[in-house]
Image (cartoon, rainbow, N blue to C red):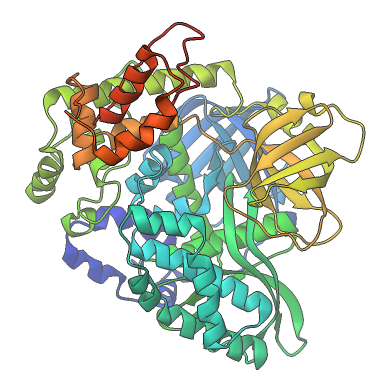
Length: 636
């Protein structure tokens, strides 16, 4: 039987048992598509990219019944009417549990029915749509679902290594070049130098010992590739090679455009939104364009990312977007990615699985185990994964160390944890359980920024929390914006500190932006962006509160980082877990003493002693004193 791409998406991780299995991905993405069953390519009335072709039904699962070749979900809708949802063929392999909210997407001719059948050719389902999953997490799960889940739970483990730095700089350089139609190599290199001189990049170069000369050398390929793109597709208006019908780039509409679909439970940041003209009629169409630093991927994750962007486009712009673009710096290759229903079905099921495991993290926190997808158990690939330590820790603490008899993976996992003793492993298990308990309590209380359960009233309130606002001022680094409402509303009743908000420009096409509320007043709020944004002029925004966060405390990431095998982490474990005494120097250098003298003149004896002891501390110093004794005023 021919294997359809959507099933391939789901079973890829299970086939990756050894490096030789990588041969599975030697075919191009187009060749994979050509191997699908012809039935998948038939024209159907049901199309997730066309809102007019389906209706949605939000249901609460009361019972899950596993049949031989299907799953029966006994549900109720918001009106309390009982519905039966049969999941067949591809969808029968999904993960469901009593209490889940499911959103069924069904052909319009079934609107009045109480029993629905979702199969390969008709319908789709999204589990817990209030769980907003990032597109890059879904596309990354094409290769390893466990890594995607762990990356969401335990953030900041991807260090800004050379490849990451090169990728970020190349993206910014390309975006600036395309917006200004710059193809001169010298000007492109000057753009790179300006980017590299920003504080964030200088700090990363210093802390992670990244040689700027090596970065510049690595960026030569993206520079030449960018010049070629601008010259061919912007200056000369050449058609995209191999794309039918003939398509030319018209203009760039947005850069790093944030989009969210609460209907499908996904969000993403699109590198570029472009307008193209296609066919003899030169019909203007919007497309997402995704940039990749390296060469073409045969795993399918890059194409999967573009397909999900097409779904976001269709949902947000209310017009069908069936094609997106991929541009690879490594080979100056531009590739068109066409979206079909079977691919979207497979990706939505991956999205459901990620949401399932993230949601289950808070279930039954009194148990020592929590559910995660199986690892791919490929030693060669796993050794390069930034989540390897976390993967091994969770596997060890879940008492599942032996994996299908793969002694090589077991040996690698044991070696990864050999620097940790039993007390340290128990420390991780204990704190993980406590964070799960705290998150479960926050979810139970319905606290904002905790995991949001399905709640019809919550959805209603979310719509009310949209208000037209005008920009008042920006911070110097362009990361904080202050806004005031255009009408007389009480913002204290609409927003709270740390709310996640989506800003959409009013009156013209402006990139959607995600931000975090940092201050709220009666007639003014301030929001902070994850990075600096440049605005051509002041504009008005429609500001809406969105539920995009799980309650994964960043402190949990700190606990897992504490288990890393490096000098600093090893010493911290000795101090925090083993309760070793802090170490102090026996004396201070003469030049340090001379610098301290003017500062210490106004201090009393105890304060001077505290300052000197702090300067001599190699680990930490704990200073205690009554209020007014100068503890805060004399911090160094």
